[in-house]
Image (tube, rainbow over all chains, first blue to last red; front, side, top):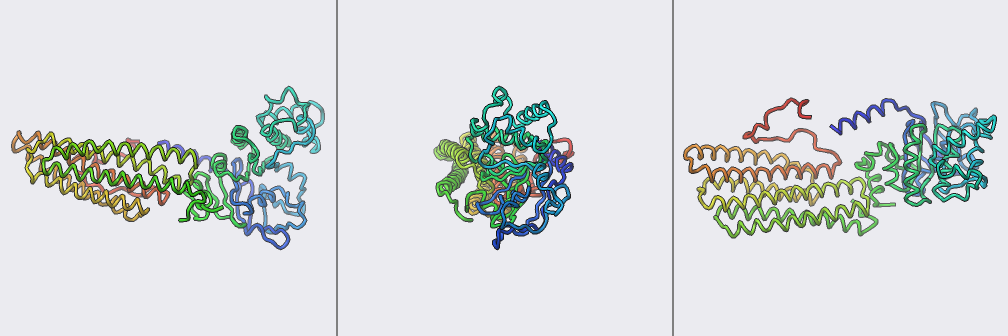
Length: 268
Length: 240
């Protein structure tokens, strides 16, 4: 009975899903060295997709392609296509600044600006022209901090420097900063690797809530974290996508031997 | 299959496996002792069988504790996760097999040699087959051998057929003389116990299949127990 219910839920979930991103035959090179080989991957809207694999497997490279962060690396070149809502983000006409407003990013180490908590959150909306008057900024700061689950802890000290917060709070501040510009996608590059277990749990809870509004792609080295937070998991090895599927299945019954060996700790 | 990078994890998984095999060997010998006690009307052996069961229960607890510890410490994934979970289930099945053998041993004392040998020989044949199934299923578990597990899964129907014939035989015996009813009933329960052991062997087979393949066995298991109403085909929608 429960099984049937789960399956039905699953089917309903799947039936309303659509691909936010579609990568087709994606090759990425750093100078002569190829980092990604013919990646084909759909990332579903309002789901959390985790990218896992040993160091150097290409998962972070893929993540950085999704908002063209790789553009800042001169020797990096990209072939194939990545479509966001059907539009190739590597087309000539694409405004990269606008793209990065649509696709926010949270990094491994919390990196708040050396400014007040308030300004950390208000900065993005300001430079993107989303703010006409002070009350707009106040509202965006409050709702963003609330969505990031930080409001209660900082509402009385919004003028204090963001760098004075604890590591977990700083990371949530970075998430608030990312969602302040109202993005559609949030990319997370090992967002919890510098945090203690409680701060990690808070971020994971947050990821779960954020997926209602955003599409989330997360790179993580923690298998357990990938299993806990994501609905889809992609396993990479040596620049290739080895296996992609439902997280529930990848961690209980992976189809590929390499995936099995990696997630069970048989090679690294 | 490659070994784990963390060798202590490998050791713990092996220890889990060895404990299951030890448990299985003990349950097998309990069944052998119980049927021997019945055949020879040996009260001492029957009592020994009954007390031996405590050791099996102890081992089941050890397996459970180790499995919980592995989950807490190692957070196993994929095949390892299935292996740990399945081990807990299989230890439960073997523990039940021990209980059934113990129950059979208790009947020896209740019957007190009043049953004729040729009636007991029906149970003896059942026990031979049950022991064989048990041995095969432990072998299948030891070597992750799905094919052998599936053979056991199918062969349980043979045990059901033997049970049917013992059942019929005992019924006739009871109808002939009401003085036969008491020991015949005990024998009937004993036969049912052995038949149940076969069912536990098939449970183990299903678990081995899940452990290795990651999927449940598809299709209905062949059943031949015609003595109960349970073979009546219920409307599929009503029993959910």
